[in-house]
Length: 64
Image 1 (tube, one colour):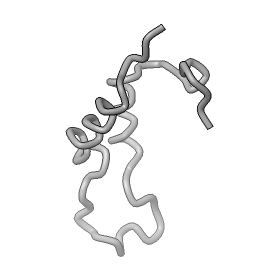
Image 2 (spheres, helix red, strand yellow; image 1 turned 30 degrees about the horizontal axis):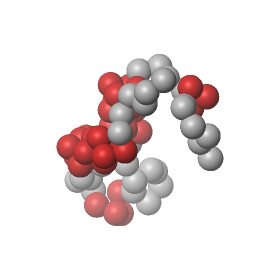
Image 3 (tube, helix red, strand yellow; image 1 turned 60 degrees about the horizontal axis):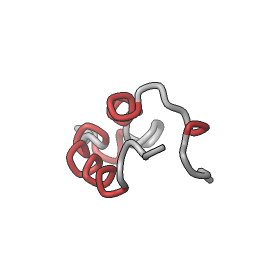
Image 4 (cartoon, helix red, strand yellow; image 1 turned 180 degrees about the vertical axis):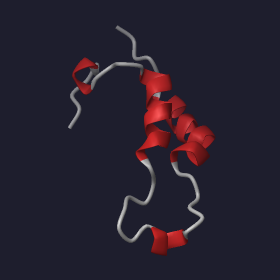
């Protein structure tokens, strides 16, 4: 079975989709004092697009 993506393609994903995954906050670091630095929605959206409903147990190699 072949992997869906090469490591270089996943690096490209982060470079290409980085603004969606890590949006800039209008509040700066003070606004993040009591919550996560980045919302999960950005990374969840990208991971859903790339991997669908695949789970870590579906990985072709051991994931630690």
